[in-house]
Image: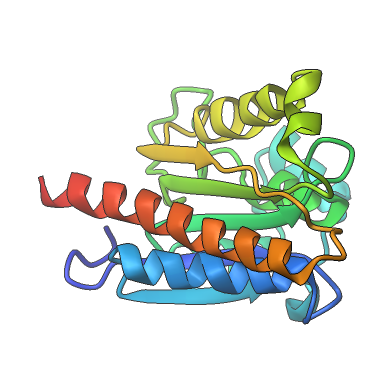
Length: 209
């Protein structure tokens, strides 16, 4: 924890509509994280912050030639370093992250910050608790039918968080993002809050133990 007395989490989104199902679900996740024990929870929308998700020549040079990461990437890393946990809330696009969030991962979760694949021994400053809350447009059966949910979990929990050596990670599928029934939206938000409270309590209890 950055401060064992005041554990902090950040809820990350990338959505242009501040009153979207994504935004309302992110608010529910934030409430759940607080309920589960995080003393401070911030919201961070990448589009509102103006973060550029485009992986360019400077990012390539940082990876290939081990030059310094671009200034905006380092600023984003420093911001994330203030937190003990990251919760990413997103609508499912083609069975994965929307483009801005994928670009954010590609640019920000760099070698010697998020992971060490060269044995450099660099201290890894990225938060080690990552939680993913994908929002499906329809019901859960669609995402389980062809293994899409397993695919998302393999990519994000095993492939991303696992590669980083995360202390804790989970993926919670939320549904009915495009429903016309307000009650289904309320149900999704309640489920998001409860799931976030559960992962938060698990993390906080693990630190206390």
